[in-house]
Image 1: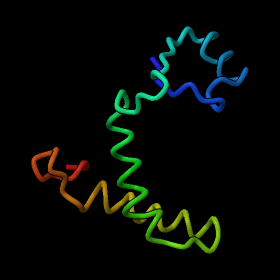
Image 2: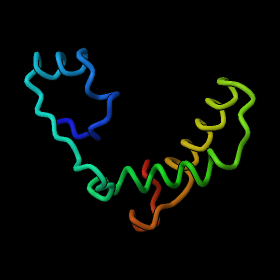
Image 3: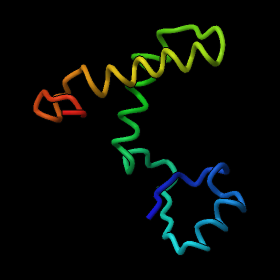
Length: 90
């Protein structure tokens, strides 16, 4: 099952054809209900607060480098309270 917002980026004919051909069930979150997707909303908030709002990107390459460094720190170095102070990698 794929779960997504009912945004135009996920209602294209290509996506809908792919889903139908493979008989993949599709579920949309209710409009105005971001907490139906709380994990992603939480992640997006952390990424925005800790990385995107902290840097001015000179170009796409620079953005990719900084976001990759943030992702590596988040997944391999920083303990998460929701994982009993382990990193996601651990």
